[in-house]
Image 1: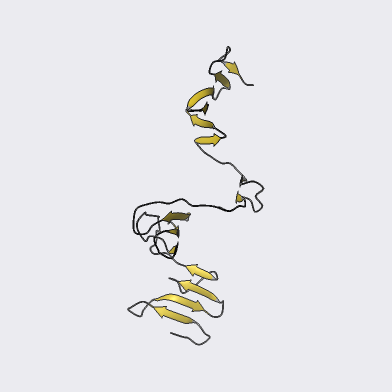
Image 2 (image 1 turned 180 degrees about the vertical axis):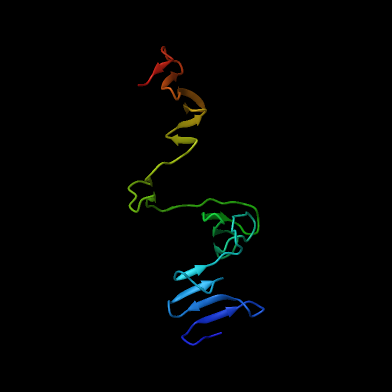
Length: 172
């Protein structure tokens, strides 16, 4: 259907709901919506587009030419946006690569100065750095290398160093 003013609509098989809509006045394309809010606006498959492996649950899918692997993009009912790298024909999740050929990644910043630059609090239960693993458990931090704990720092500031003469030093 081509309307006065240049709007173009493509309808589903019953001819009642436009599923592909060009708004000529705003120069915006809507897929699944007749009110596109950006240059390209894809509206969801359902009202709650939670990710699910091996299914076509996302409103937007970017794939390789063989359609074997791709990136699903969606928004759930709570407003959380998500990305999931997967196959839409099998329940296999794949890695997401950010800047695989260089560049920095910023979270909460528009000018990241490091490979990963977080402006705010980051949370992890395990952190790895040059052969060391730092793990939090029960309010204590454990520092390990080679799979063996070497130090423990508890919430009171007590430091236990494996093999040290003074195994209960306090950091103040």
